[in-house]
Image (cartoon, rainbow, N blue to C red; front, side):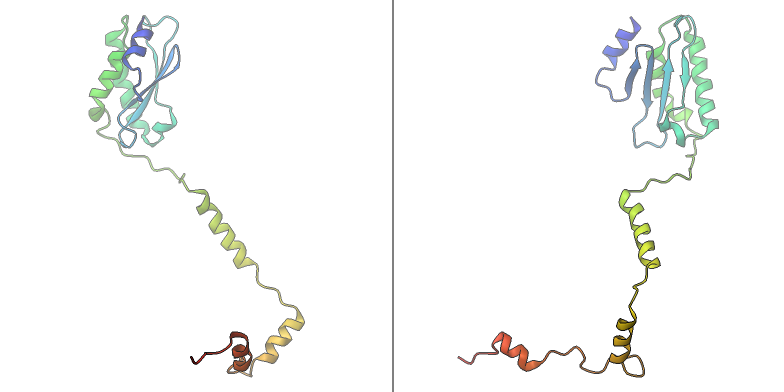
Length: 178
């Protein structure tokens, strides 16, 4: 009966997710909130006479310190002891929502070494590294031509890339005087 009640209460609520008929996830707080967390709750066979299994091992909770997780679990276990023998899921979820600020007051986000990058960021450094490693290989003949074109200072002579003016005018037709 509690399962049907939970389904009807949290129908369409993005914070509630039924994993199986005896396992649930409930997000406390908004997705963008740094103090949000997900409760994983599993009912044992003798529920509600025995306490449900409560876990904060979801990937979403990786940014929460171990001390804060332990505090949340201990406070929730106190609520479980108070409500033992009755249907308590709704009570636990609502209690956690109401007390989110006090549960997370000592929360300091855990910074991990894992950083998210886009695929373009990953590809760019490797491709530039390959470009730096690979130098243009010239044949001996190409090297001789470069040396013959330059003067003794290694500079190209003045006008080496100028266009033959008469040849260019014959192709374009020049300026018409009408």
